[in-house]
Image (cartoon, rainbow, N blue to C red; front, side, top):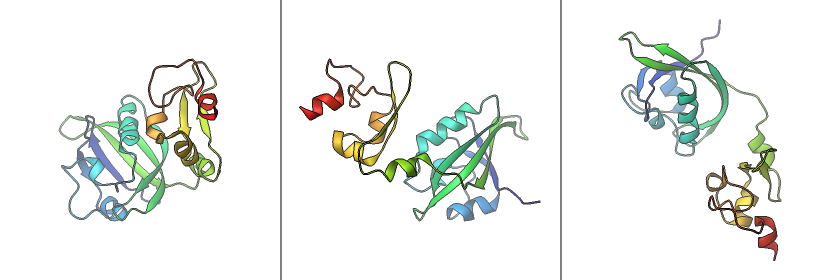
Length: 172
């Protein structure tokens, strides 16, 4: 039986760690004891902390598994499958148990970034919101990925919709 490293966090942002196996700190290169600190301190600065916190919140009633690219304290990328499970701690508090396993899945972000041309992943249903962009898209249209997410292709900079589509206006 392979041991899967686990930790438990509080349900409220900033998701303080309430229990952690020592190997978790070693995996992420965290020096000291992470218990009592925000889970965000465990990960390196390139980690998408908002996305990770959203996954913790979404595990309120049901278990879920999500592929993540997390970064250790040295900034090294780790592809992990994280399982989020609701649990009750020994003192009766509602917490989330997080389990980490290596992931060998092909990451859509990698495929996107291999493209030299601007690409955006857009929902198929109206109003066709942006779900992801590559760095070429960000450079071409002057907005980082997090600014474009959830916006329409008409204007990833704000939520108002101009009369001219973004790709047409930029070409004129």
